[in-house]
Length: 435
Image (cartoon, rainbow, N blue to C red):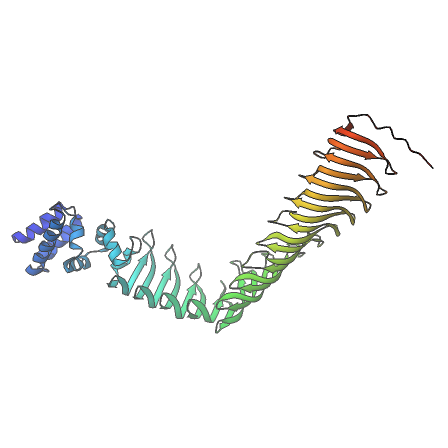
């Protein structure tokens, strides 16, 4: 080894390059893998970089990465040696456009201008292979194989621009063929899908077909139409007992459009519209386990929102507005045994604002409410519709504050202050003259 070779090795050691790299360079020099010209070039570049940094010591990892010599050295390293160099060097990671987790594929791959090209391997964080195949311009291309985290084969076939494209096979957890056919832009396009027993459950042509899905116990869980390998148009879902739990429309694998839901007793519990798999958006109806209608109205993102009606034992008990699932916000009406008992405003499910109470279809109160109770100015009426009190209410108590009381003939019999319903002043003496 000449003095220049020794000088390079000394600089490498002084700048804390990994021992593996030091040994590798030493080995390459002994085998005359590098010409004198290359050694000189490394030395010159290192000195130039030191001058730019006021002669301060520079980590050699940052120095030699900019030379062609480094790439040649790098190509001789095994994957552990490469990782030792790359994981501490963010500038080199940036140059190759990769991070430490995806870098491992270099062990079997090639790069052209920082992108994956040719044959290569990908690894997960646990150092298990998740892909073996070919790349073009940084993306999976032509033939390749995919593996799950346990190392089992889940797909083998052709790729184009990073997506499954062309002939291919998918495998289930038992590594049996689950689908065999052709793909287009990552979607199933032509071929057959199989259950765990090898039975054909989907026959798809040009992206469309009728299919069935079974669970691992061989129970039918879905039957319907597919488009581009996803549930589209009409379909039906079943539970583990084979009972129908949903029938309706799908879009891109999610419930979308009109549909019906059933409970485990096969009773209808909802019919209406869906959007992006959420129940419900638009108009719909809900039923209890006995099949009785309990709500009909509008939904948004699975909650009652907008106008609606509630029922109990087949009788209407409320109609009005909902917001974020709360009954009630806005105007509404309450019923009992089919008769109107309240007509007015609500907030967070309670009477709030102005409203009217009824008994046997007769008005008995007209006034203000707060948190479900009479509160503020109001008027009371008897069953004949005659005014019997007008004044102030507080927390449902009649009466607190000023008020007036009338007899059944609408004659004023008291005017003054009330506290918890008790009169605080004497009654006015009223003389009634009959002519």
